[in-house]
Length: 168
Ligand SMILES: Cc1cc2nc3c(=O)[nH]c(=O)nc-3n(C[C@H](O)[C@H](O)[C@H](O)COP(=O)(O)O)c2cc1C
Image 1: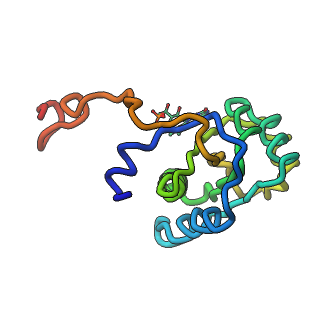
Image 2: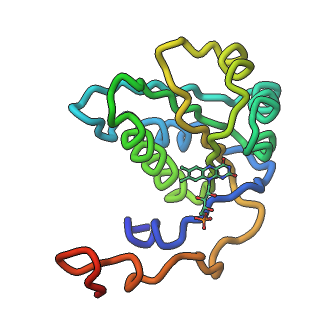
C-alpha cells in the first residue's frame, strides 16, 4: 500500500477480531515508532507493549474513553517527556507512524487519551517524569473497512491561499 492510499483508507477502529496479530507485525509497528523523528532527536519517548489479556482488561478499566481496548489484540502506551514543549507533536507523529505501519499489513487500530491517572500510573509502573500521551489498541478489524467514507471537512474550508482568509 503506498503512503497516500494508507492515509486515505485508514480509519480508527474500536471493534477487533479475535485473530492474533503475528509477532513480526508487532515488531514492524515498534520499529516504525523507533525510526520516527522527535524534536531535536531527543527520543524522549518510551513505549509499553501490552499483550497479556489481563493487562488489556486493566487498561480498559483504567480508561475513561477507551473501554474498547479490552478486546484488541495488543496495545501500546505512548509515554513522552513534558519537559520538551514539543512532546505532544512527537506523540502525534509516532502514533500515526505506528497506525499506518500496522494498517499496511491490514491491522487496524484505535487510540484513546482519557485515563484514571493515578490508577493507570500504578498499574503500569509509569515513572513521574513521563506523561501518558496516548494508548493505541491494535487488531484485525471485525468488519471490512473499505468503502466507508471519512467524515472530513472539504479542502476549500481547510486550506487558505498565501494568507489566512483567502480560500482556495
Ligand atoms: C488526539 C486524539 C485523541 C483521541 N482520543 C480518543 C479517545 O479518547 N477515545 C476514542 O475512542 N477515540 C479517540 N480518538 C479517535 C478519534 O475519535 C478519531 O481519530 C476520529 O473520530 C476520526 O476517526 P476516523 O479516522 O475513523 O474517521 C482520538 C483521536 C485523536 C487524534
